Image (cartoon, rainbow, N blue to C red; front, side):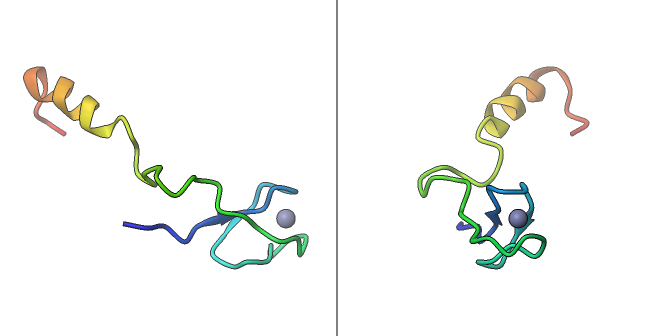
Length: 56
Ligand SMILES: [Zn+2]
């Protein structure tokens, strides 16, 4: 699953556009291609949680 979220490195604004809404600078994808856009530790947290707390 690929995220199209981009980030302006000038003002820190997140956007889906290639140009920042605020300052007009070119935005970049803040995540490397192989890095999951979702929480990379989510599965470990679920594993830990599953044993003692299944409310989540
Ligand atoms: Zn900006």
